[in-house]
Image (cartoon, rainbow, N blue to C red; front, side):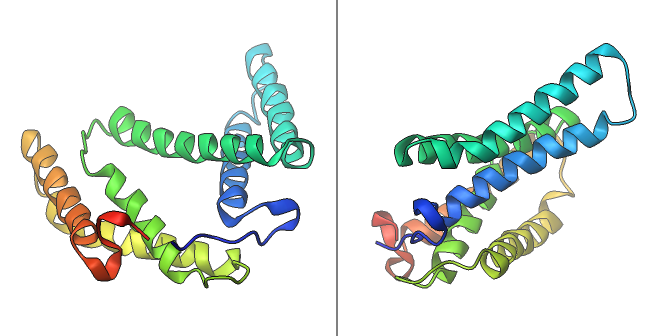
Length: 178
């Protein structure tokens, strides 16, 4: 199958870099939100976030490849969980198709990744996000007009369409994946 080859020193792949960069960006964004406050609680959060960001940045250099990949996957799925929390917790919208965009970006990345060559983060990441964003724009055009249980059903229907597009199509890998 196709995979992202190690393009960064020490065996760090594109997915490793994506996970580490995402975790540091989230910690940095939270630090910026609490930057103007100087009470004890926000200062404690700023110190904790700074220590966490430094530990995350240093981990690939001191951890073994197995643990680096495991922590990277945990961070990527943590970013996914936070985006789901944003959708359901802040907006109150229950979407059963949330993972479809995650999968679309993964397939777009897999198709854009040259096999056996180093992965360029500067063009593959924006291209994968753009592919997923365009699909979200088209699907969102139809979904945003619904409310309540109908919103849930329409998001699930679109997610199932995307799933079967990749699952039943041999040109896109079929049930074996890429």
